[in-house]
Image (cartoon, one colour):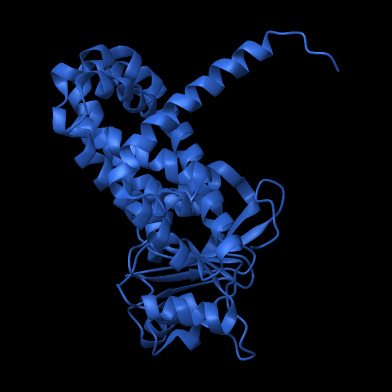
Length: 349
């Protein structure tokens, strides 16, 4: 969308939600960890006010606020560039600056990571555009749920071509992390978890990066192939995964014990390796059968959708989905075995 490699190129972000917020605070830490000084935060607004700097707000100061759980009005003005400013809501001008920051400041991307639902709606979305009709940010990635209404998303795309990664796609890793927390609580003792916490967290982050890339690749691939807007495509992906999960969960109830055992490795592969190595032998004892069944259904549905696309799943009759999924796994295994065999063979040029 931006034509930039964030690992190599500088980019600018404006965001709502303060450094003391869960979503915004973690977003700041992730941006700095992954991209360092390439990521320039040119504006942040929260309940207390806003801080702005076209040269990028000082990272040390931002991370200090995150560490000490402080809102943006605590940003030290001495750490601002020559054109920076901190506006507090204890003045009328401060309130106006805070309320307009997400529209007024220009950036490569806008990340709503806090704020009131429906802040941008069909009646005020034009405020996000500049006087010439171009967007104040060509990309919106929704960290906070419902900051932009459905109608406003479509209008921003139709009128200004803004690419919007909808909350259901942008937030997906948060939901997955919650599932790992639940699995950890069921599979590991508190002592086991804390003894292996650093490794488990590293493996979770690796999985989240992989899953986020899969989401992004499918989202933009289907957008290019089938058109529509990104929020529409995001909804199609979510609907396809949910529909397939529901159909598979129902079908799994009729599977033989042998067929269910064939699918259990899906659940194991979903887990961080250390957690699985330590406790998966006891999964039947420690995890309710219904949870295992739902987890398998979700893993299998996601595999089908993210590898083959939404159209593949949508065209399958629901009553045949489980049988097709089983055959799919069997063929995938056969291909993997064949690939492994070929890798050990000296093939002619």
